[in-house]
Image (cartoon, rainbow over all chains, first blue to last red; front, side):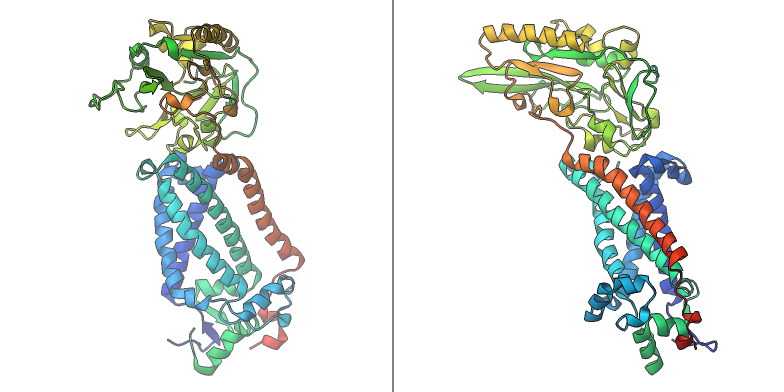
Length: 214
Length: 289
């Protein structure tokens, strides 16, 4: 695959990767809104987006299964880019510089920075837990097979994992707005050379060296 | 049943006060286990009044029929055979919703108004608002609510809230031939229970006592037990029932804190953008292509 285009744009994601990401994103949004509707009464009105509260309860778990499968695709594709390195620890220690846009003071970032990697592993921990606990509390199909004590733990864990995940995704979405030019990577699949050299210099160097797409 | 509207103490998934201008007297059903003969008239009366019919089941060697509470059987005689000091005691307990002062079902319910607690103490499901999530099942310390296989709504004893609201006693009370079941103000029922307990103690039941568990704030269905020190003898009536700590954490502390934290995270992003601002590689001379 060609990684650079005549306009100087660099390809970061293939069309299949983008579609996979957006399927996960859309199902996540549906899950977050339907789940929050049942989490706190202040957000109960979100259930109107789903055809009412009963439909919210019915649809949520099915959408959950779709998100799990979709995310599994992303995880299999990207896990090896998300292994934590020594540089990542250093990057996290300088989170203050990250927040203040002082990227020149940070260790060299490869394809993903430590924040992105941390989000990846947060999703790896929470999404399968959400699936398992979700099945345990899924009515009318599965909840009847589990003892009430197990259901009580599952329902709490489900809420905790959902909270961690939603908070993580809020950061993820904001980071894409904050770091200009990032949304294009996932929408059209390309980034500019300036973007790559500033935010992911390690990855950019590898691209220049041999057109290594990863 | 939405008959009363000015006397609601609590309403599920509602953060503002419900209509509670009118204060009713607290009521209670007292089940005197020591007087019960296991005739099941209360079970029949419940189905009769509420127009429900249980499916014909199979005998599994016990008088207990059906084997468990169901969406059609809101009350059930539970039979236990207990041997102690060479004697056999047949402990029969009428099971059903206890109408807790601090109801776990109501705390867990995510649907506004699907569970309400009247000021007379009755905890009532409003099935038209029920979404079928089953959280009430997780919330209940007594394993009472049942989700219907027909409509995925939760059902349980209403303490005949429709009858009580017009000054009648619950149907089960009306049918009991031995006055093992009595109904009245909670205060009167406690007085009545104390008389019964004194009588039982005189007759050798040293541990006779009232079951009105404090862990759920007291209940509006109470038992007189001959072995009040061992409620678990009566088909596992819990000794110290309370809302489970996991449910308490989930619906207590976590609900408002997690909501605030998510809101705060989103706001932190917005304020980062308007103070520190975006990070744009194209503005940067050094990285310009």
